[in-house]
Amino acid sequence: MILPKTVPLVQKPTTLHPLPRLSRALGGPELWIKRDDNTGLALGGNKARKLEYLLYDAVHGGYTDVITVGGIQSNHARMTAAAAASLGLRCHLVLRGSQREREGNLFLDHLFGARVHLLHPGEDREACMESLAAQLRQQGRRPYCIGVGGSNSLGSLGYVAAVQELHGQMEAPDMFSHTVVAVGSGGTYAGLWVGQTALHWSTHLQGIAVDQEEFEPIIREIAEDSAERFGTPLPNDETLHVDYGHIGEGYAKPSQAGMEAIHLFAQHEGILLDPVYTGKAAAGLIFMIRSGLLQQGQRVLFWHTGGAPALFAAVDTFEQTS
Ligand SMILES: Cc1ncc(COP(=O)(O)O)c(C=O)c1O
Image (tube, rainbow, N blue to C red):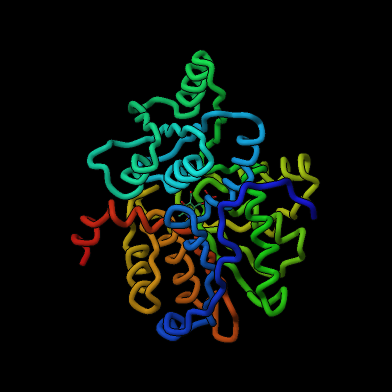
């Protein structure tokens, strides 16, 4: 498989290692983790892998600015701001939410020199990005627009490549009976799904949704576009698995099970999860163990996708629950 060129943003390979103390505490399968919380760019996370492809396109297409969208504590926005700074691109972030204090990711967005535009309630984020792009073009600049989460077919190639990377680390292609990963805008899962088919990776790829959106059509569309543009194989729908049972009260609203997962990973393994994405994905994993879907004798991979900077904007939530 020949993938398009990239700008180097990720320290590869990220580590793959077992979680012996957490596995013992949960009493189920042997748990392993792929540490994409340590991708190296601006406190790490999954978006760096997508940005390697997207920003190659921007830099080599002669663009001057990059615009992207997200929630007020978007990890994607923080990593885009950092990557843009490192490549000499001007970064604009269209964010939903109230500014309150510059904490967590929002603090870092400003530190990386991004220009932050806050959406008014009810305002459409894509429309706002387009009108900002039009204004910039009028000023003679060349804006490159990245949709939510960098989740298009080009960005998701980062996770096709990540499967290739994992193959170089696994003892055998069927080492993990299951792989669990957070689904927020679908691009990470789509890349893993396409990579799984391309490289005959034998695992049950379980996405855990962190938002109520219907993700299957989004993931399928990214995979279809990837097949058309980059000649990647089209996976079979029967292998697409997204669980919507761990969202709690909604996107970015911490759940009790997610908070328990954060404490378990921190106190048994010294690993940081976040309340929006990886805490809920880990809650899904823990649920699968406790309900007997995953058992002793299996090896299960948790694909960590980062997000810890958002912890620093959630200190109050932890104080209320401890
Ligand atoms: C920390 C973290 N994990 C997981 C995800 C979900 O990835 P994706 O948007 O590719 O589904 C995101 C982004 O939305 C994220 O920031």
